[in-house]
Amino acid sequence: MITQTSIAPQALAGIKVIELGQLIAGPFAGKTLADFGAEVIKIEPPPSEAGPGGDPLRQWRMLHNGTSVWWQVQSRNKKSVVLDLRTAEGRAAVRQLINEADVVIENFKPGTMEKWGLAFDELSRTNPGLIMLRISGYGQTGPYRERPGFAVVAEAMGGLRYLNAEPGRVPVRAGVSLGDTLAALHGVIGVLLALQARHQSITPEAPKGRGQVVDVALYEAVFNCMESLLPEYSAFGAVRQPAGSALPGIAPSNAYACADGTVVIGGNGDSIFKRLMLAIGRDDLALDLELATNPGRVKRVAEIDVAIGAWTSQRPVDDVLEVLNAVSVPVGRIFNAQDIATDPHYQARDMIVPVTTHDGLTVAVPGVIPKLSATPGAITRRAPTLGQDTESVLGAITPAGGAPA
Image 1 (tube, rainbow, N blue to C red):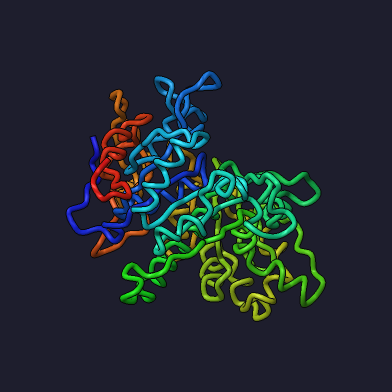
Image 2 (image 1 turned 60 degrees about the horizontal axis):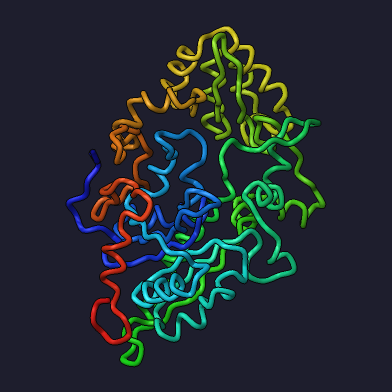
């Protein structure tokens, strides 16, 4: 069962993508392109004595009949083709697929594609319009290029892990692989830019235009989201420090204990702050001229946080939400999976989508974002079983002679 369908043309209809990557970063990029109509052909290794084959993510976290339910998110809308890239036959077959593709995605250690005879320079000789998205820990150049790189290391090198802590305590990681997904999203942006540039380079000599390499490093994707971290160090020598649930330099913005839980409140806009203080009965702070702008509030943030915390601690979460929403102060409860699955706004925005796996389990998965008004994305195909599309895809390959194989 797929309940989210698309009757409008999709933005990436007609774009063929060969996904060679595994686990998170490369496949997340492929999933995002597939959600908007690209034909994504996922290449997976065959079963062997070493294991069951396929993308290792098939076996990650909680399984149903031997397959991760996460797989239903990461590989929706894709086709699965089994090829052994360690063999000459597998590499020859994937090269034929790439010859007819618009995009190839890989997230192997730099040098792996070259070792397999699948370097971009070689592939682009027969497919000049090819775009290659390469996601790796440290990028395709530089002194660290050959180091193995996972999201956890990228988050540390990119500056995120240092800040993600309570002051004086060991930094912790977010409970998901942010480095991978941030890199994937940067990769998708790069692919879309490269497709536009290819369109602009169309000439009679290059009827498809010219492709290029999109080089994304996990640590750079994290670093790109670190806001004022580097400018503040460069200008003032300031090394930003961990601040727990607060946002240093922007006040007030923090998490506050309630009688039966916790809320986050963003009262850092000038007019918002005044409404917040009036709502909690602190007219003195609302009318204090020093607190009318952010620099003054930053100086007295501890005082402000105490005032807000004193008010929230006497009230249940629902009451806090009701009072502050009524005066347009940004506030929210901290959601867990159950909260998300049952929330009416998630439902109204088509962000909770039920799909049924090949063996009959109904699983809720996140809906498609962003929301496009004219060419929306959609979930039109459940995640494939291993090798489900091998015969149909390889049977349609056009070899050098011109007829299907």
